Image (cartoon, rainbow, N blue to C red; front, side, top):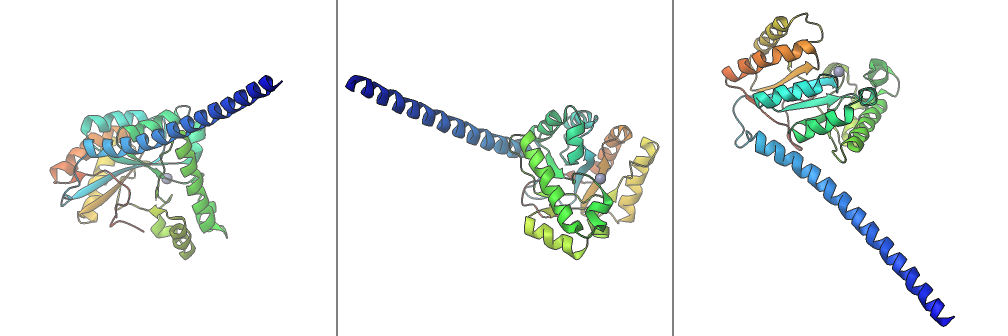
Length: 261
Ligand SMILES: [Zn+2]
């Protein structure tokens, strides 16, 4: 009996030890995984796009809204070929609809780009017009952020692109709610209008015209969408900016934009 009791105790405590050991292992593997992903992201960006020390005189941030889409991987391949970093502002509903959404998000990060928040619904009324629009806006950004975090095993975004532009749609409540949530927003100052243009040539001409209209700012935030014609126009657009002396810059946490809301 004494022996049995002893055995039982040993068994019980060895179960507890094993349980604790597994828990510690699981926790540390999760920690390592999170750290690795963050480190990989930063390392990738620094290694691939080390343009920011010192910051060049004329810079351009390339941004793609409304993804991920069936063109995301093609866009990533093209950016890799041309050695250009970008920010992808994704919509939460697309993450549910697109079959390879998870792979697209992971590739965006691992190829050295940044994922930004572009709401769950892209719904004008919910985000700007309804009585609780500021809170809806922030809630949708936090929801898509959580989704991205889950699908990428830990990437947490703090940058948002307001659908249709914040400057023209934000009310004072939006600014307050966003500040409280610690989310930064950025609009654009050159618009490709690629969602409306019927050819790659016209997208290129629009980018050229809008840059000129804006008097060639030292910091350009260039707006594109994930479209087939955009893919066709991109090489020319990138070459055009580089010929003018602009340097394509990666986004990193804590960076401040002049082109803010
Ligand atoms: Zn949009």
